[in-house]
Length: 197
Ligand code: GLN
Image (tube, rainbow, N blue to C red):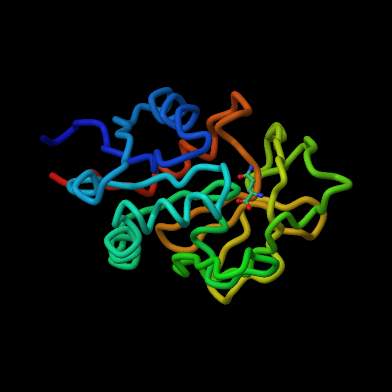
């Protein structure tokens, strides 16, 4: 129905999916937890949350979600990955677990646990491209983006290091915007989504 809120799936196999559901509700979407391939039907977008990318990778295989999810995002389904979700989207992975595979749909290289064990978790102010009040970035055993492909737009950086990127309908951040009580990135993601009529 025209004017109905966009149906945004949240991959709910593991990790911080409930916080994404709440953030999506706050920005006016209709979030749906996704645990089976059938639940991908009729979505206008999908969020891949933070958590543990190796566990999520295993669960993507056991649930049968890996292939249809990859095909849907390749086919243009808008996707937003945060932290482990960014790892899942990345084309290339450094320091992955043995045998770890990503969906390979976003042309960046992610270095898993890129800040090491000494500085596993931290907060940092993040200035979005358009300026404005900095966004509170919560980093939890976060990946680093060590390469961005051509055509990948850097939405936010700390110094010269990208921490949020976008390429067409795919967005990703190395931090957890869903934990920060600042919904600007979720709102930005929704702007790119056209509900199916
Ligand atoms: N280090 C985690 C991983 O490899 C990501 C951490 C997170 O999502 N907060 O998946």
